Length: 319
Image (cartoon, rainbow, N blue to C red; front, top):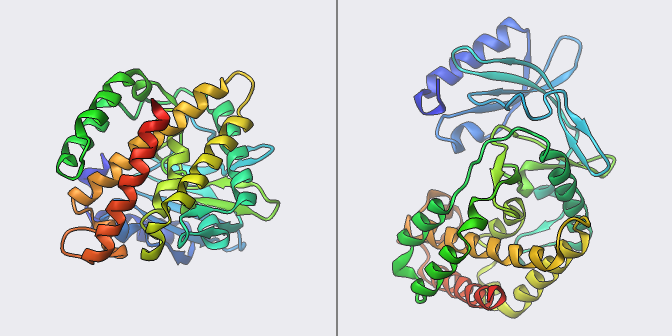
């Protein structure tokens, strides 16, 4: 049964059955059920011995991806204690103690990540690239998706033809497969008590273009910025330049620093196209930040102006 076949009642019925049959107490239900249109439900539970687990219903992690967990130098992946695949799938996952990165050290109003936290994230990113390449993961991205988003955003782009040319020029880049987590974002990463990065919500691990995960550290903060900060494009471009430099300088020896810098800006280009797509599609998540058709016109205008400035700079970097 695919996620698309689930009804909210199926998820909730399955949850009730599991809580009762396993004598679990629900401590907290996260808001993923509402955010994901009824496709999944994630809860923190405990058993009669007081042991805590994450109960995920509606989607599960592939068994090829560290089913028994992983504890590395910078990275922790929780293990799966139990998984059921008949009917509505579920899993009981190890609970990682700590704080979401989004709660401890992200300054969305300024659109950037603090340097100390960024160092930890990059260490975890590179460790993930090293261990993930040994996994038998599925390709989950292609050039077609970039083109689809670009075409949808066409009316918002002043230099559509130039962008289209770049996309096709680097067609092979978008089709290459590197380990990626969906989503490697501050609200899906845990800063553990021993200062490691914990990966949670690992159901959509797959192969995508290089740097895909780093995009999730960058672009979601764009929509959360204060409106007055959209005019501070020079400061933000300096931040992106510094980010690019840090990625290249921390890359393992088998990666060319020149290639990594180029890959970084190609990733930024794809993320910009995705943001234009979201505005053109009037994506629901932008509503929370008053961006898009029928919302705060002043804020939307400044947001689009910000994207245009970042886009122009990105195209220069790619040339």
